[in-house]
Amino acid sequence: QVQLVESGGGLVQPGGSLRLSCAASGIIFNIYTMAWYRQAPGKQRELVATLTSGGTTNYADSVKGRFTISRDNAKNTMYLQMNSLKPEDTAVYYCRKPSTLYSPGYWGQGTQVTVSS
Image (cartoon, rainbow, N blue to C red; front, side, top):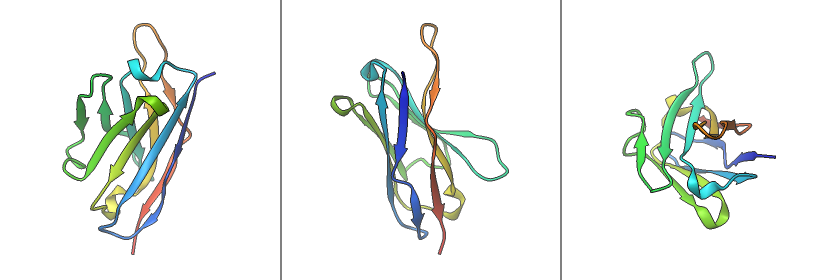
């Protein structure tokens, strides 16, 4: 079965950095666009960044210039490098394999990121 397992969350001070990982299994990882989402308390889940199989990236305006999405296809792993973190980045971060015409979408279980002094 398909599994997406996030790790790397935690508590960090404003201005700090974290790197999230998403380990995928049960899918042909290197052919799919992958994405990171986040959900803050009381808010809707929002798209943070996407990365296509060809390496094209897209970011939410709120994280442009601070976050970097990447992938290591040999390890079936996606990353989110988060720098210059702000309190408003506090959320549960989710790994997502979006649905396509030929395959369903999948979510990871999420990892908590808290930015606070």
